[in-house]
Image 1 (tube, one colour):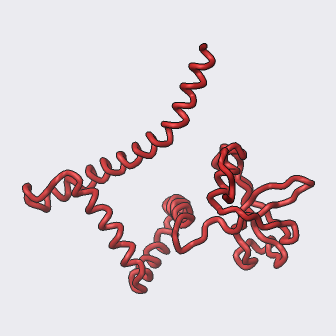
Image 2 (cartoon, rainbow, N blue to C red):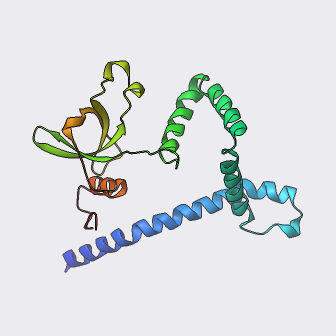
Image 3 (cartoon, one colour):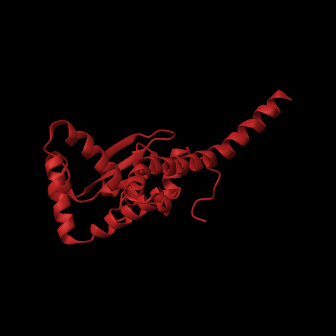
Length: 196
C-alpha cells in the first residue's frame, strides 16, 4: 500500500513540477519587470494612465525595439565598440564574455549546436553535436582539416566533453538537435519515439 502511494505521489510530482516551474518562471519575470520598470513608469506617467502589467508590456516592447535596432549597421557597430571596451576591463570581461557566449548560443543568427552525430570510440557509440568545423577557429595545435570539434553532453548533468574527432569517425544521425539533447540528458528514458 505504501509503495503504491509513493509511486503515485512521485508520478504526480513528475507530471506537475515542469508545469509549475514554467508558470513560476513566467510569474517571476512578470513580477520582476513590474518592480524594475513600474516605479519608473509611475514617475513618468500620470497616475490615471498607469495600470498593472504596463511595465511588463513596456519591457517586452523595449526588448523588441532593441532587437529591431540591432538590424541597423550603425547600431551594431556602436554596440560592437562598446563591447570591445567591456572586453578590456579586468573582472568585467570574464563575467560579460561568459554571459555573452551563453546567450549567443540561443541566438537565432547562430546555429548553437550543429549536426547531430554518432561518435565511435573503442566500440562505443556516443551521441554528440558538431560545434566547430572551421579549422581556423580552433587553437593552432588543434587545426586539422580532417577533424571537427564535437560536444558530448552527459546525462542528467549540465556538463559534457568537447573532443576533436576525425570526420571519418563520425556518422550523421537522423535526429533533431532538440530530440538528441533530450535523449542524451535523460539517458534515453524519455519514453518518446524519436524521429516520428
